[in-house]
Length: 259
Image (cartoon, rainbow, N blue to C red; front, top):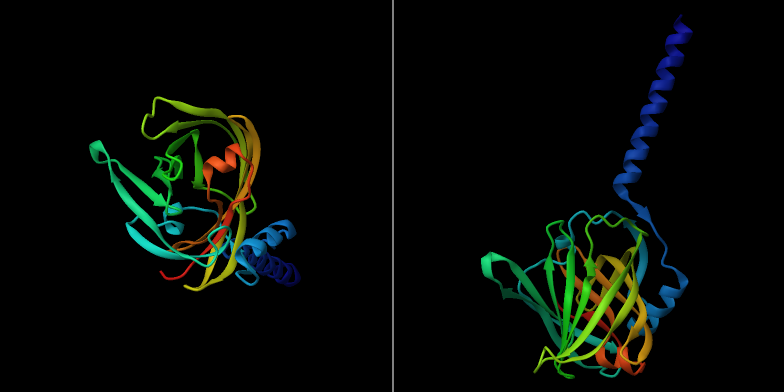
């Protein structure tokens, strides 16, 4: 009888330890090494040492933690691309909408701005882009994912979009249209070192391919977000029109200089 009780006690203790370890592992999150191709692309555009050690990753339960929806301007250093060596003042500004709805303008370059909002489900999406340099507005249906709520570390979501490129001075005049197939991947969480400091940052990769106007094109971009800070580094296509129509390389890497 005593042996049975002792054995039962040992089994109960062992099971409790296993459950505790499992819960601890879930709390800490999964560690995902940066894939070699992504490492190569990021190093080429941001430089060595910017994206470093893999850290435990957790599901995206609140996108606004990684991209706080509050007005602010920030300085980014351009480290690769046509404007390498320059400093750009970018940021997020609130737009007024009827009925108390909130919308936001995210200035990604001096001439390129994305217009975004938070959905009822909690996703942060970008529905349109304006390229002031080219005088066009680009509308995507459905909207571009920016930070989707509920994404799991390593998860990829696929989407198909209809794209309309219209003149800003005459929005009814459609310049080009077409469709894109895209994937949005939560690559993982990494230690990121930029002039503004060192942060644990989640990395998202966006890849799209399709035909808009006369050209078939494809592009891969990266966004790095730190909790409570927002965007700390990005790799994007500077010239939207060039990207969709001419297939020239104007990819730019930027890192945050100050919070």
